[in-house]
Length: 214
Image (cartoon, rainbow, N blue to C red):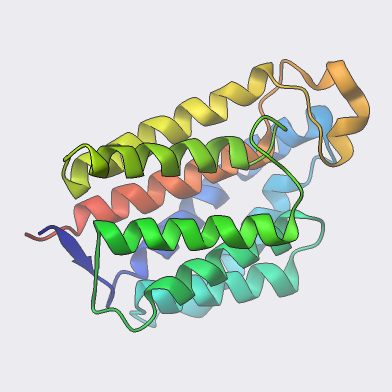
């Protein structure tokens, strides 16, 4: 059975931080078209602060995610800090104490993260938010496993669905947050949260896949 070790896999979170920081200007540019224009700056700040705390720790994935969640909830303003903070905190709780993470545990982690997001946000799929990336990615992962595919194949399915979900937000009208005031004028632009969520999920999937053992 394919799985990856919890211990030492905090490096995946460090890679997430690198990817978010690399895309800081791009995320803020997207956000500026229909939002406050600070999504990339805020995300880079939070992920960067967490990476600084983790850089010499050789942390487990659970510990690293918990650290990131705490930083995002305490240091980042607006709606995205609490949302992503809750998501990562719930991710961490789901796998805390587990020596390895197999496909079942990975799915449980994602579902717990989704529950956290839904517990503090009113958005649904189709509202032009990060859920338009997250939910299809989770559904694709679960469908792949249910269909008899390997953990690695399911991670590939997750990544592909995250990209498709992100791109779907171009044609959606924002129904949540500041962008919702624009109505039809919010159509034709990627959602910044959906875009950062795709970066996060793809980095998570790639990091997990690289560490899989049989």
